[in-house]
Length: 564
Image (cartoon, rainbow, N blue to C red; front, side, top):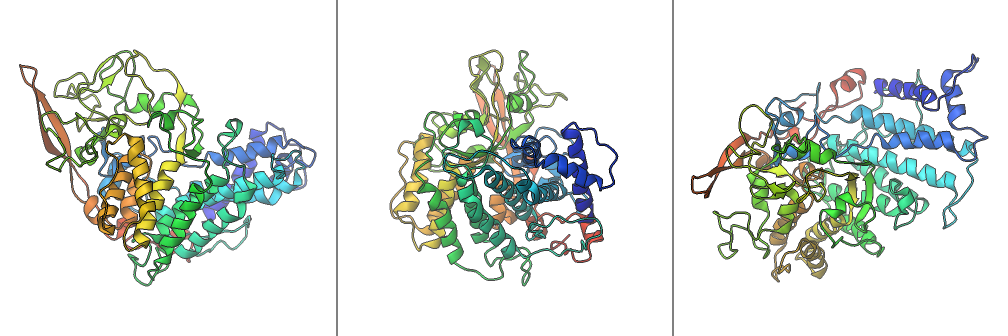
């Protein structure tokens, strides 16, 4: 923990470079000189303070190829890395990591941002900001609420990885302060994040978001964060299903059905705003168009083709693609047919010799398969095909490439720039959250559960999209879990969904498959699912990330997670 505080102090000094000021010799501490420059009592526009606030956004984890150049989804049963070396994401998938090197460690990053937020909150009222929102909220209050939202989001990034973590409140620790700070309980952290969201919601920008401030959190962003946090808190891993019996650090020690109700109320409040809707233009437009009614909050990514270049099929000469992500046969099989039936249903119409025909349209927007059109030709992932030529060149290991988050380049020869923001909260997730928590709370699913799930299926293009009447809670749960997998693939959800459902012992402890395709001399294709990768999940310890070893060594009050 001491390392984090020192890092935060150094960052305050670095701000001097950001504002491009040349300090003169003074008798007051350098940090105070810097703060006086940033939070200038004569700067009514808040130019330097705004730069300080903007820097906090850089600490929000990205989604795209974040974990050692791979999507976190490649540490699940949805995909594997096309890189055959011992990648960070492969270590996550096999459990070959330790407390000395967790591949997606965010401890120092998030606590650096939390301290930065506390500095901002403690000092922004020194800046005489002019202006108000259209609803009359003063800008000092808006900016302070934004900093508190980012701080709450940082705490959530910690809690979903580690369980309960130290809550620092508004304190800005200094050198010499007592830094032997214990972890707060999981429940304390959940209550803190949720209460922060409640406190700041009405001080944030109203919805729908003004396109001029597309990267800023709104009231609905705070509500969406709260809804997700309460969803996790109600889930089996945390809601009385503690992997460390008697410990409050990794969950509640008692089960309460009311936690499902609280999560349902939080999700319903967003629905009742009447501001958001599912984008029916195109499933893929949600991710490449900034101004859409499904987007709630995103990490700004600019305009570019980073996802295409990093993950596109490798056999093209007009564009350099690295084909980094190889979706699995398990993920492809999760997408049923366009008629809404799973491929295992003998009445679904699924043809193993023509496996990509008449499928759930989301499959075509998520995965490149053999025969998919891209950059003016058909993708070839059969053995020896242009996009699976063999040899040492990085290429698909499963017969599939990632398609999601990319622009529409089926019939062009080159890419063109498009918005590639990381969508962190969108309305489809809110509907799925609501359906899940309400289904778990009620003895049998009611019409509200059906409506939420069917809205997702209808937007997907399933026909018919309606579910069979009279489903049991267990049957509906299976459907909701699968809809989450399809709808939210590669959005940093499944890695944690399977854990919070407490199903990782089986779902992430199995052999994954590729689709081995051969083209015969007649041009006919043959398909065979063959093993390609063995996932390993070590229970119970892999349900939570290890607290960094350096923090445990420095802080005698820092309790390590079970098994580490």
